[in-house]
Amino acid sequence: MLVLFLVFRLLPVVGALLLSLTDYRLSGKWSFIAFDNYSRLLSDNLFHESLLVTLLYTVIFVPLTMLLSLGTAVLLHQVIWKRGFFRGVFFLPYVTSIVLAAVIWKWIYDVQDGLLNSLLGLISVGPIDFLGQSGSVLPSIAVTSAWKGFGYSMLILLAGLQAVPKSYLEAAMIDGATTWQRFRYVTLPQLRPILFFVLVIETIGAFQVFDAIYVMTGGGPVRSSYSLVYFLYDSAFKYFDFGYASAIGLVLFLIVLIVSLVQRRLVGRDD
Image (cartoon, rainbow, N blue to C red):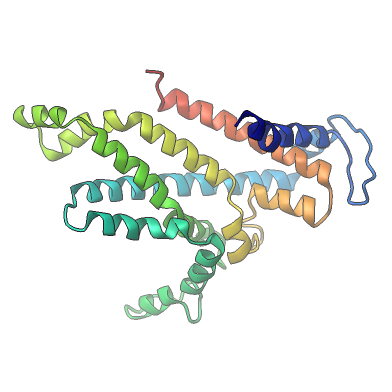
């Protein structure tokens, strides 16, 4: 396992770090330019725009996924009849292809023949161009990604709910605590380490969003969904500026690391 980690995790990171210090092109020619890529990145307006888009997407996606995962986990924890069936149904989107899910949701959002606009038309609303308007494109993509990925976090939270000692809940019930009070003051504190883990992995996933945007909007309209990873992709495979793309990847890593440390400070705990 240590060898696999070194070969497939550590070495690529070191390689990206070294590559970010060079002007490496598709032809194989390169020159050492030290921290010029990072200086260029800090003054690049496209980087600032893509970072803002990524942050806005994260602010929408993470709470949505957390609430959806926790709510579904709580409901499934109460289900006795066909519990395994319902778990499988809710987990199924997670194991499907993100490209397939994005294509389906792109049709659902379609302004002309989409399912959602057809339903809204029944109550004389719309049509709404969900993917063609700057104000609605990020929430629309966030809903797609949340639907696709909430099943994984749901199972983790469900396992955490089942690990909460029943004696704690029974003691609270004897003391006269309501259902909400038992959940607020007994269940949630017990779930805190698991909620922290889910929060971190969902935040990392949000900062790395690319597939759904690539399929559904291509970064549009007018770069309203142009994420940081999409910027990295264009730099590397459209303009073949691999050194600059590596610098973007390292900066993204540092941003995610800082955000994770802040989340640990606010939500996580050591014990």
